[in-house]
Length: 266
Image 1: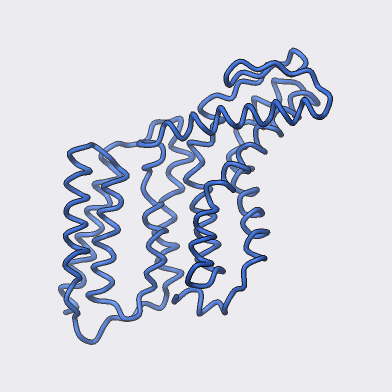
Image 2 (image 1 turned 180 degrees about the vertical axis):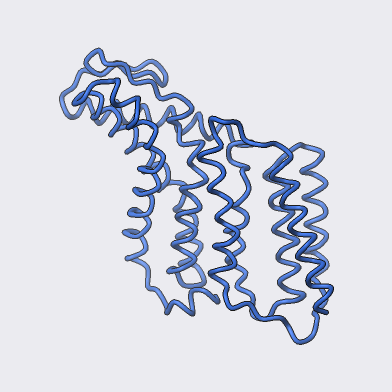
């Protein structure tokens, strides 16, 4: 059984590498996409110590079939999202077959460990840009500033603030989702509270990214556009992650939590 389990792990590792290497991120997105690889060691750490099942269980047929179907669809449609879902289905089958009391909810971490947001959800990036620019326009107007907006281009007291794709949150969106998923896996109890917290990740990521755009506008007004779009802009992605961490922490304080061990093994 141990030999079959090791063979299964090797196969999963090869498949994961294939999904990642099929479309390497460009230089502009590598810094924000490569941190997603942390999802895999985090998955192992939160489930530690892993225990082998004493008797090899038969893999759930529908899980394996779902993995095969999703993988074939992913290859046909050239979709990293479908390939990632298929890989997670295979991992779920591996857990059922070889691991005892494997925490199935931790599967959201490796699912977020593949760069499917930047490769398959460009429209989500546009939505983040447009709604973020509109919200920032409203906030500065409330504060008494004269603001003109054309799409995603803002003029705040004649200072241009262009909400470009780099500001859209698309490159760092999945990293923010990973941060939020890590927190709910550590704190949120099993059941409906967990899924409520998981469903809130995208809205919280939008809030964090919109706050980033607002802070960039404030920095430009106070210190000049060169400062806002220079060093400060480059480190804006880390600002989003920190804000996402704080937002998740604040939200999860409203959710009754179990012990650390209960949350890990739920």
